[in-house]
Amino acid sequence: MKTNINYIDEKLNEAKNIINEFEKFGFQKNGFCLVPFTTIILEPNGNVGVCRLHGTDKAIGSLNNNTIEEIWNGTHLKKWRREFLDGKPEICKNQIKNKNCNLCIENNKLLNSVEFNETQTTPIQKLTANFNGFCNLKCIMCDVWTLPNGYYNEQNFWGPARTTIFPFLKEIDMLSGEPFLQADTYKLIKEVSRVNTKCKWSITTNAHWKLNQSIKGHLDLIDIKNLIISIDSVNTNTYSNIRKGGKLDVVLKNVEHLLDYQEQRLKNNKSSLNIYVNFLVQKENWNEISDMIQYCISNEIMPFISFCERPEEYSLLDYDEKLRIEILEFYFSNLTKVELFFSLRVIRPLIFSLPAIFKADFLTRLNDMSFNDTYLPVVNF
View (cartoon, rainbow, N blue to C red):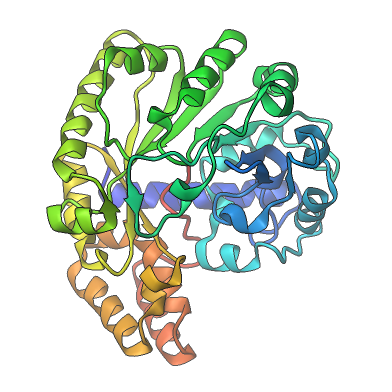
């Protein structure tokens, strides 16, 4: 795993390459995102979204009222696309400003297959399948576990998807509650792998379960892009405070099993699990970034440091100005350059929440480390 200065330079260069690609197609770096041209998100209640960063806040339709095909070229999604085609994003204006999320390396790998039209004749390329809310943990910052289960059936999804979606997908992203504890996950693996072996899969999990032969057998059927494990702390007390009902030792032991299984896959000429650990920075754990990154480095796992914005009561943005400045000073004083780079998703929103004089100071300090406006988040999934 690369976690050194060369890695930073490599990622910054990839960001510049994406900007150059945008310009080739006639788009400015802050004016275009391809996600509305490639992706739909299915929520447990039948709502359909597009962007993970917006979550359920920006539903573009509901399967209670329309088919997926109708929503794919419906009024809401065409408006979203039009904003990007015109280079005047409004829906995503703040996200692009604060996170540069439109420059995501992984998403932009689909850039050359995008149809640059408001109405799409190209099938959906990426499916985020939040089928069910069921989860074995009740995390304080999450309400997904309160959402319904069992919504998707032959009529509203499985039947149409077999011919209009599954054969054409380039990527599938499994989220929602805990996918490894949901029967629909394994049904989707079987259905898609029968007709589309080239599809790449990303699965986000709490890893609070036991890796068994049945799970391995299903994973053996698919090409895995990455496995994202949400942990949020390597401190036992902090973990239990955030992830209610969970035990850190169960997760860490399962990570060991997953690393062993990854070795088996590689020996059998299958894809790596490409494991990431997602660390969602919030009030409970904001001073544990370095501990998490060091855990990841020691296990040759890539850290993904993300930022809790909602619910506001758990976000660092809920702190008063003085404390937000103190947190930033802590990061600049205690994190290494590499750790700061991995933490930019946290640092940037904090900086942009401050008055102009403080914002200018912290942005100058970032610029001095070459973390300027060409910055790209380390990775998106």
